[in-house]
Length: 293
Image (cartoon, rainbow, N blue to C red; front, side, top):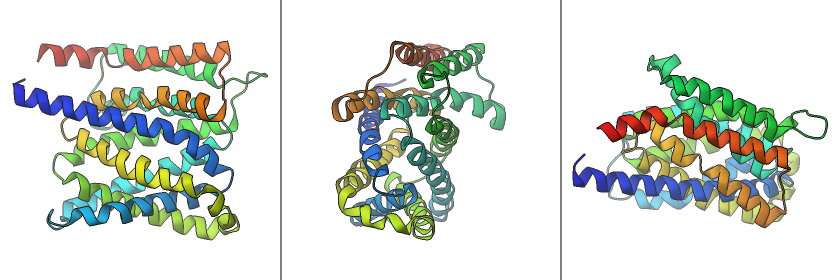
């Protein structure tokens, strides 16, 4: 790996790390929004706000290509479904738990690559999946050792987030980062807003109370965070990007503690530790290959 490529990789990893910080903080604002707005409405408003904020920056960057439109539509549909499940789940779980469960996509990415593209992971990935699953159980248990309703939705969303990471990794190398981001935001925003106006119109009066959460979600979480993800994945492989992005779980727990006075029990802290162990173990073979190269 030459000096120029190393520099690009460092910048890519820093972009992904900043995205993780922004996304981690967003879990707390999403909990606030969930108390006032339907999840489809919130997502629709914040993603379309991101489109409005970023659209002026596309001037002078050339026309949208057919590849960017097609790829952006696919990424946007995945993003819409994943964001809807995440926002619906966060209404009945904590910001910290939602962040850690979402981080399971770091284990799911190599597994889905194996199932769909027949790129089988190292044997450590299978052990990592088991360790992370046990951690998920410990993290999500309540007094009666049951899963909170929102935890299941967050887990289903983690599968879609993993698919989204894989798709962005395959699209970003051939597309302009900003134009690809805008197409997926537009698709995601329109789909969510259409469903929100149809199913959740009764929550529209919650916009004044949740306006600041919409602004943070649109300008920072979407406009900045997801654009940094596309930029970072132009250089970083999907599995490597996933481990950096998974650090959003740490920042989500920190944000829940600072902003919402959330706390984790000793059993749930053990679950966090097991999940992070699974996350790191899943990357062992990838890190070894990268070091060899």
